[in-house]
Length: 425
Image (cartoon, rainbow, N blue to C red; front, side):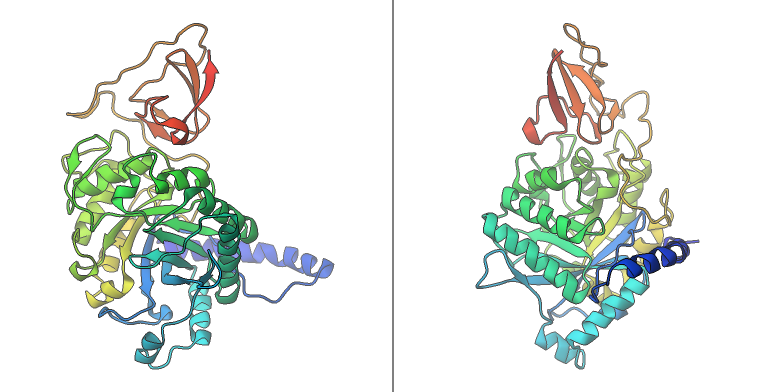
């Protein structure tokens, strides 16, 4: 049974069990008749695609025609409200509607409801290459939260994708996302699409934002294209368009996020990006390398992350123009990964396998530190895997892991790093 059929089976059980509860609630208080976003979980391994609300030469299609391989559809893009700082609006592009033979707002809403009925989620993206929604103060943060929640209520969106490439303010945008979470509740789908340069250091705006909202963050799908060469997590230069570029970059986020919060973003066709296109087979190899330490290139992660969420592509429309090669290749492959087919909410801690007893060729040797003074926590070890709440001693201090980590030295990454300093031993 694949991930979609398993989801449908579990959803039927959930609906049956909730009928009696729902009847009791309705007897107590009236229910406001508004279309609310779906609260169903994403599959353990999900395929995400952007749906273009504009015509740029890719195949135009209605939401209901998005192939079933896509679990999460990201509508691109919301627009900045010109008279309300931080506010976001959305309307169907008239040119697109015309070329689809008349695609109305009512049709769009009905299509979202259809996708929900299929167990899929739809969210609104903010930003893009040319779009910008400045959230630079408390007023703009409140406007952002209120307007996005309004769009969720109006259209049935399940959440928001942050694809801002200009002037991101982590403090105020983080506040806005927390306000939105308070309004939308646990079912909120919150994703981000940083560029590779945005995840290179812990002090970047995106990494600061991720650190602020990681407890409500669904998934980050970094754009591994239009990039050039970058440093991987082993501090070696990796070149765009290779499996090593993808895996060594994903490793950076796996140091600070759970595996289910990390996905791989790639173009659906050579026309979908200026550079960085790889065949979907390479995407599958990267997923295999990260999840199982198989099919890697020169870089092999020291520990497997079988909970890796999946892949994202720009865009569904470019995939359609390319015969849906991306969806037809990557979608079925996700079902073969460990845990494929099981719909889950994010786990409090990631699932990782025990790293090998000796590091792979070219990696640093383990370097445990000796406890100092009256330290009682075990000494930090570079090759050990630590999950949230784990405590270690290093340089005479006790350190607590905020989330999953391996190889990140306590005291070297500042307040946004994984280790919280709990003081001298």
